[in-house]
Amino acid sequence: MPMSRRRTLALLGGGVIAAAAGGGTALALTRTPARALAPWADTSRYTEPRMAALSWAILAPNPHNRQPWVAELVGADGLRIWRDPARNLPVTDPLDRQLTIGMGCFLELLIVAASATGHGVDLTPFPDGEAGPVADAVFRPGAAAADPLSAHVPARRSCKEPYAERPLPTGTAKALAPLARVFAAPRPSRRCGH
Image 1: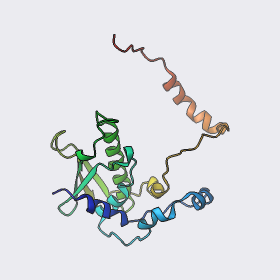
Image 2: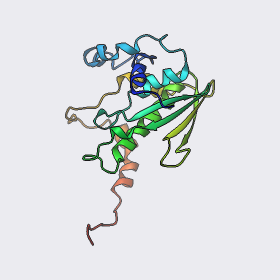
Image 3: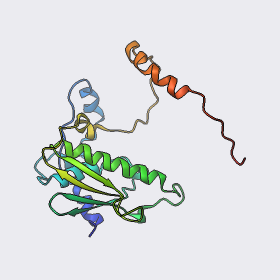
Image 4: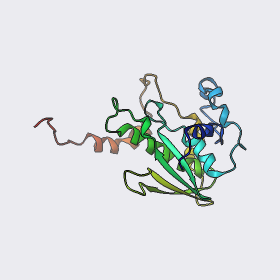
């Protein structure tokens, strides 16, 4: 039986992945929404690894903050992930493209968060076909090293400010140069309606 929306939101109080210290400390002190992150400050909230991972996965970016996921605990180590069609965006996302991307972000963040406690996640997308659940996940203890990104989950922000007008460091620009050729390659022209 899928988890209720209320139970899913209750996950907000769970888990913690320590924010990376270092060069971003000053920015973190001035820009980190401490009150908004308070529910994740109690590291003992969830000792159950699936609940701890879910408490972080619900922070995944998603269109219009619809949070279209529903999680069902299955057995001792499994999750079944559903997409709630009541959260569809028929006007702005009639083909459910944005919601599908948001679900992918949720699943990726679930895997990253599980790694913070040493759990690997075996993910089976659309186990019953497209009309069924989005994924089945099985947690495997001791099967993963902590993903370096797990420490940055609470620091993720969407930049709403203009990009700086300063040049990239020489080493960075050289490392990115081969990619620029890939993206700058000529593409076949497409003409709508023809």
